[in-house]
Image (cartoon, rainbow, N blue to C red):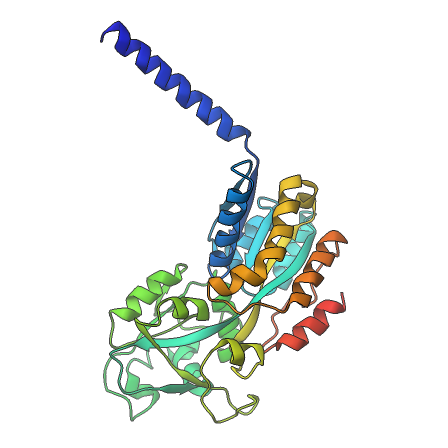
Length: 337
C-alpha cells in the first residue's frame, strides 16, 4: 500500500473512532413494550429526534406488553408502551425492584376481527362464536369453519393472532374467553402484527384479531367483520364495525380499550426523558390520528401532563384490565388519582 493509501486508511479509522465516541456520548431514552403502541411512539421518537437535532437518541423496542414490563420493572427502560393496564404480578415485580411509575393513557384502540378479502361467506361474528373458536378446549376440536357455524364452509379454519407476551392477546382473551391468557395454542402467533396481516392476506381460510390501526393501514388487503357483542353490548344483537366513533362511545363492545405509556419516576429526573414525555403529550392530538389510532380529548392529555409534572404515581386500574371501558369512564377514573 502506498503512503497516501496508508494515510487515507488511518484517517478513515480515526473518523470512525471519533464517530463512535460521539455516539456513545449522546444520551439515550430507552423504550420497549407493546407492538400496538409502537407506531405512535416510533412516530413521536422520530419527530422528537429531528426537533432536537440528534442531541438525544430514542430507541423503541417491541417485546410485547408483557415482555416490556419485565424490562421496565427491572429498571432497564425509561418508558413502557402498553396496550393494557399493568397487571398485579407486574406491580409486584416493580415494587420488588423499587420501580415507581406514572401511568398515562395516550389513545384508544380496538381489536379488529379480520379475514381475507377472498372470504365471501362471512360479514359478521359474535362474541360466543369467537369464544367457541379461541377457547382452550377448542384446540383439536374446532378445526373447520363449519365446526363454528354449519352454514360456513367445510374447510380448514386457519387462525392467526398475537403471541402470549402481547397486551392485545391479554385483552382479547379476557374479553372474549373470560380469562386473560386463556387461549388455544394451535394458531400462527407473532409479536409483529404485520406478519399476521401478511398471513391473512394470503390465506382465504384465515381469521385473525389485530389492533384496529393495523387494519386501517391495510384495509385494501383485509376484510373487517362486524362484531355482535351480546347482552352487555349497547347494540346487543346488531353487528358493529370498529371505527373512531364506535370505539370512543364504547359501542364496539367489548373489544375497545385504552392504550398507555408508563414512565419510570426516576427517569423523569433525566432532562431528555422529561422533555420527551412532555413532547409526547403535547403532540399526541396530531400524531395519534396520523398513525390511525383514536386520540383522546385535549383534556386527557392535559391531565397526563399534570400527572407528570406533579409526579402522581401508580395505576387507577388496581392490577387488572377493564373490559369495555368507555372514554368518559376513563377520564373520570383518571381524574380520581
